[in-house]
Image (cartoon, rainbow over all chains, first blue to last red; front, side, top):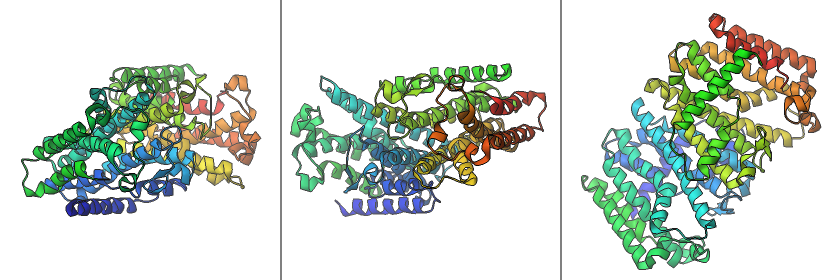
Amino acid sequence: MPADIDAGLASAREVVAGVIAGRPDFGPEPIDAAMRYALDGGKGMRAFLVIEGARLCGTGAGASGPAAAAIECIHAYSLVHDDLPCMDDDDLRRGRPTLHRKWDEATAVLAGDALQSLAFELVLDAGCDDATKVTLTRSLAEAARGMVGGQALDIAAEEAETPLTLDEIEALQALKTGKLIRWSATAGALIAGADAAPFDAYGQALGLAFQIADDVLDATGDAAEVGKAVGKDAAAGKATFVSLLGVDGARDRAQALADAAVAALDGYGPEADTLRDLARFTVTRRS
Amino acid sequence: MPADIDAGLASAREVVAGVIAGRPDFGPEPIDAAMRYALDGGKGMRAFLVIEGARLCGTGAGASGPAAAAIECIHAYSLVHDDLPCMDDDDLRRGRPTLHRKWDEATAVLAGDALQSLAFELVLDAGCDDATKVTLTRSLAEAARGMVGGQALDIAAEEAETPLTLDEIEALQALKTGKLIRWSATAGALIAGADAAPFDAYGQALGLAFQIADDVLDATGDAAEVGKAVGKDAAAGKATFVSLLGVDGARDRAQALADAAVAALDGYGPEADTLRDLARFTVTRRS
């Protein structure tokens, strides 16, 4: 990973950890401990996008940090619920037992629910005026609901007889992973009172590039290097960007999207290089 | 049920149905259908409290309706998740199959999650200024998270060796059912820009009175009349207001709380009679 991205992610994780540590108990045990467990160990990419977007628009992490923590809460809750036995039934997440394996299913449902609530408390602590808080909160809620729709489409696709088309996969991913990434990319500009349009274009391209690159890694990566099982999609007969475009076609598409993300930030100078590097790294990463 | 409460609840349900019907699709199927199913068939007491509180303070259902719909979304999501096999494992709710029985567990988890998100979209549509929207949304999120904590305490109590004390049960219920009822009671006054303190006192007393009356019904009611299984708490050896205070003691406590709820509205004239009737009816109801 390029050093600037590595440093940016580490700094974003630190900001989020500070926001979370500064809050009183999230609930009676085991809810408080389970929520903090779920928030721990992520890469912090969404938080980084919020904080870096705000920084580029001249606003510091004191103002954007709570919104960065909010999106990490939504992301964490979605992983906890997706890992449940009735969903993906995963035992491991970020190299540790999933929440329902460490505690139990009821605690996983409840801690996920409380993390979603907490996200809406945190986003309202962003350092901006009330009108912007309303905009941020409404779009966060819409993004969170869209993500659920994407997850439902994904489950339906696994059970369907006919594999999805390219348009259908793009629509699914725009909801499932795209909505939160777009929100993250734009939130900082909104908090800073700047034009969010370039960041929206950046986030939209980045989100899809990230997902296509994930499919390529699943099809071509080495499990030890990627850090999780690979070849799952092909084994499941699932339509992916790779099954529809081929490995080279998917790589080309991801690269074109990364280029579009970079181009979206043309109005900014070298101060936007870390976001540009992130878009490039997204499609060249090996894990 | 007294006619004024009956009419008020019916009218509140109609307002909520109108708000919900006026929204576009909540998500891809089965999420949209499941969300609307979960919102259907409730009494609408929380929505009624919001709308009636606003009305008393001079503001109509056009302004308060979205907030009323929001709290019904939170209530509906909590029931859907509480009914899950890993929680209460209920097959029936409001005389119909629970959501995970009608669809499946994954749909129930996801529809519940999306209902929580939707609540935060709706509350921001309340007819009030942005500062009030921020206050309403923050308190709704805190109430929703508090409710989860109450549910976790309830699960822990069922597994504990020692039954809860009276203070512990009150603290549990103040979270599990009290938080949403208090929010409902105060939201209308906040939207109207009126003093919410009397409504907060009313809601706090009403919520606890409601729960104690529920325990009395469970201990003394007739299943056919109550409309659900009774005697469950005693059979489970669970500490309740009845096991701790006796039937008469619990009835007296509930009556005192209903009186306190009525007294909290002393600053209002006959226009507050429906809320007073609701407090009185809460402790004399037979179902």
